Length: 494
Image (cartoon, rainbow, N blue to C red; front, side):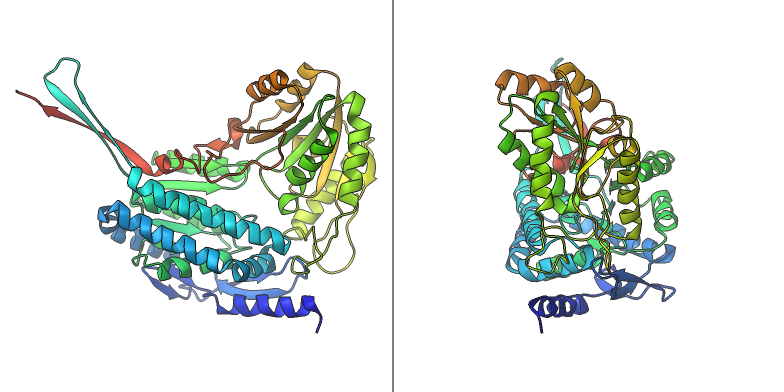
């Protein structure tokens, strides 16, 4: 047997050991209808598991369990809540390699990147285990002196957490960590393409001592129908969603009926600005990181490359050389640097964006084609001479494609960079400190990387502006999304 065959067999064995049902009230069960949905390996197209396909009654059962557990969990001492998260952090770290095999099998990213995600995911539990005991309030004398103002922060209550397929564990821990630390119970709906990583995470939380009903999980092929029913239920107090802006708009409209508290991390269209005084070697390295992390299937991925005209050709050729040399293959192959896209729809979308840009006059410096055979593979691609108005510049690519647009001066670059409804992440490369700070301040983006291509950090507030979302995850403010402020006025007759 080859090394890849051995590794794939090990990954399938781990997938076989993960529960496949609806998890509600501390118990795994089949869906009420008995329906299942297939989880496929994007590297081969083969089905690796069948999991319960939840219906409305299953979602409501999960919410009922969360509502029943809310009072006891919110009364659990913060230190105890934090210790459960800390134990879960340690378990995740100890099982990194197995969890990474499972993630690569169902999502496709190279194994080394899955290992990095597991480490990153665990850090949210460590961070929020420490924040659980730092939930504070306030006390002050009213200006008139006749009363005292007491401010407390209390858990929002049962929360629904909807996570995407591209970071199947980290997007879970980034939501579950602060919710549990704050004293909220949760219902988690992972994406149907990658539910196994979340199911494995639930097992770890159980082992860490989490009481029944505090975390409940289901996945479904009928997300719109099931989710809308939960959003109408008065027992639900909050929705946290990570996904496309298109779906986010629909959910916001539904939440408006009940004025349901929401936080959303939506789509991105990150500009990557390279000025003529930049260290080009560092800029190319940063571009590889910002573009190719997670096969380009990341909301923070660099989407549009604006390069000052004097260095645009040199930068494009250097980037094409780097991306063209990357090894494309199944994520479980140790030699692989670029894995498959998540499904055939994603592959068709990326191919269409490249074809349209080419038809509009763009030059393909490397890539620009699908890879024949099984799996959803597309060659890493660099396009130059791209027209600013093509879809590859206007829309989120979510794939290994780097379109380069030349600009003349700073104002020109900023006008194009800000010409989008999105505002999640941006990247700037320049050796000029004043220019760097000035451009960072003028970019309409929630997060900016200055001379670096990776910006995600559990200790930093993650989120965007404009139509890239509402609220922040991570950092000291991440727990605030799960806390309500209560003001108490106490008469002071003394």
